[in-house]
Length: 282
Image (cartoon, rainbow, N blue to C red; front, top):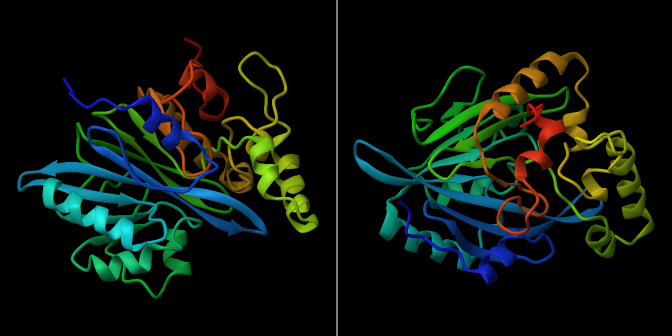
């Protein structure tokens, strides 16, 4: 049984989507950090996750969706390495979450770098160890520790993970949970409002599990990003990937964008993600 206890203050800070923060431990084997960036004229925040995993040689660290590598983040990572093992794996989980990986690959030169196929095409400046593909697990996706599913749309492929020990789902763009008022407060220029309107139009078709229309994405609610909604010829692959994810018994969700699910509040996480992940009614 885990002895780790997350304080209410740290849970609130880690879960929110309006402030940057350095590494915070949110579970016995999980740390996260968040930084701001501008994407298609919109200001938003993106979250990095560090996982502690184990193999026959002992414990090691995996970095998922790296954020900007500051001196503080580097010092914190070095401290984690001293206590929990070296950084052996860097993961760029989709074609929109690779921007900051190059500095990590240089600083942690012995770490393997893994990505989806769409990242390989974009980042020829990075030497990739391997590509994350459907039905093929790299050595670090081990039974009892980590599960992997590839969810594909017409515009990107995302590697989605389930941290078994913590019952945590790890996504970047498959789910977003952005609050409209918070989001609009930071994106107030005409160009940014136009970008938000575009995102809103993509998300207005979503309904919750009771059939009530609830705007997702930039309007609030845990729904698919516009990139994942553009399935077209990849509709079957997308459905198959979501079906795999939906079978995992996750109780909390770490998202790259927006408020995390399950660390604060009382709304059941699986209810919040039912429609997007095609979960059965419980």
